[in-house]
Length: 303
Image (cartoon, rainbow, N blue to C red; front, side, top):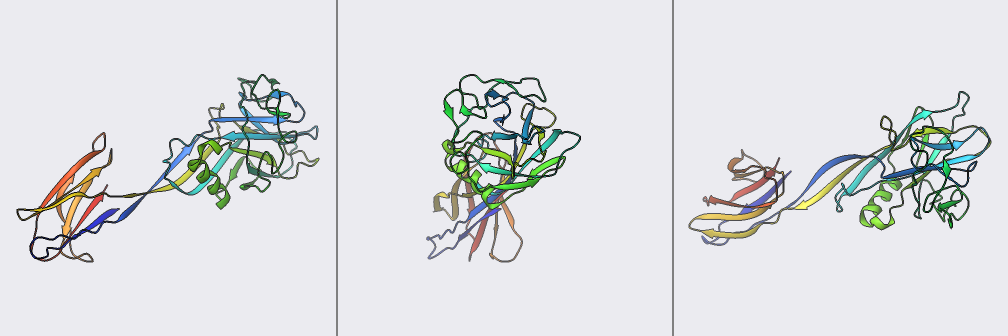
């Protein structure tokens, strides 16, 4: 995306520069920084290191819910999130299982992942130690959920951020609410407690699935985020000296640039003035060009 600069020679000395903003698009795919599941049938157990997340209603007609959060440190703080999609793979389910809809709810409180169930794909975990999430407590032993398993509008938003029908792959497609969740976590990382996944109805139907957790090397959850970052090229040290127009700008690390010129802003071929190769770190670039008769338009193209 180019920056356009216009230079006009007035009375042989004055120069007018106009700069513009550019937007670059990017995509990043993240695995959770923490995840676990909580089960009503084992209210004091933690499953934080298990290779699966239990979500839905089990054969004993008791619900299980998944908790997961992501670290967004690899996403620029000034990023504008345009879409997000969360996908989870079903790694185990009973032979007789009912279809259902799972909802993704933004969590409002902190919880502890824990380390119980390491190396296991299924099971109900082990008794929690201090700071670990269970059905009874978000941080064992005495920091309880508003209600066992989490309370709507107290522990998590009652309105889901996204929903997904059950299948071999559970995909929470991008919604404005899901984008807003991530955007707010970028602005205020301290509010990032992640999401809770639950069966929408949690009735007597057997809907429980085991979804690959972050400990499952072949089927971890994946959050794909598309975002843009707006930047402004800062032109400094603009001078008209000895018949030349000179200016400087700060080149970003790992970016290459080409400075080009033409006599019309709307038409004509661009002439290369200077090429700037990429460098490991940000660095200032100085550009000088002979001032021609009439108007000249310059652009700095990043590639």
